[in-house]
Length: 369
Image (cartoon, rainbow, N blue to C red; front, side, top):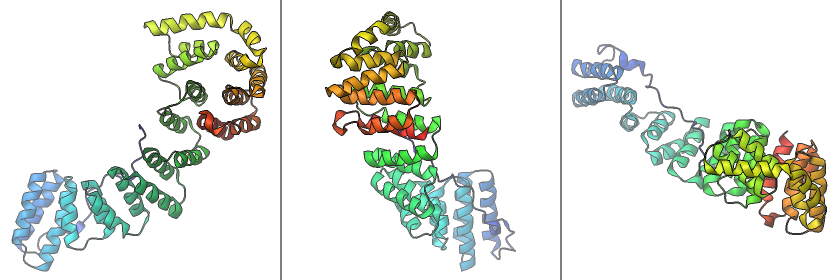
């Protein structure tokens, strides 16, 4: 599924170990060790990985006192980090008892995620909690990532970035209820078009019946998330099938037309259907058995009051179209500015109809306006 969690662990900068840049005499090391350490610092500055490795090897061979070994390990941490050899840096620093908040990020950057998690779990602070959660995500252990993000939120509050990463883990783990609950919180915090686009683009990947997908496209349009020509063409196709000819025509115009046979065929059909949509709306709305289609025609014509009345007739008939009618009645109510009524309508959609999930998303949209 194409959901991408935001990276919270930033790439590491070279460790600021100022003592390693001192002269050999000030560092209280032998000339041989001091020369090798200076060579490692110079190689690190020029991002020469081979040079760093050679100089550190020389320093280790020459180091004999505890202080020389300490200084060599610290320089190894600094220099290997500078050239992106994070595993070597971490191993060197671990030998001299570097703190957990320095080691865990290095092992994370090195891709040694089990070590990173093991160290970070025993390390206090928000940064360590973040690292644990993201390491689990990188490993594909989404259930563990969910638990880690929930712990992070419990300790530090429901920050939007944490919720975004939690929703990504829930989506990949197949935790549909958790994903929708988290995205609901996200939308309440930030109902921007960008946030809606992420949510609806992910939802779009689910298998759903054509009526639900048509309702999804209406929501994508309402939230500014419907921009891809292929989606607009599919929206037009579904709208045309469901008797919303004017909606289909508008979607094709938004897509910028097209010279391919499918676009031309849809455009011709939409134009012909729009010409008789008003008469069809009146005719279909008259009988309960066809009232749902009549409501669709009125919705296509942007006559929300008549659409609502037709959908009510279909709902009262309690036929196969009842829950479809509830969803599109709610959409018409949203368009008419009847927010509270729309939410009530969406909540009445039956769980088994195949329309409940999209009804919940529309209810979320109505409540966030």
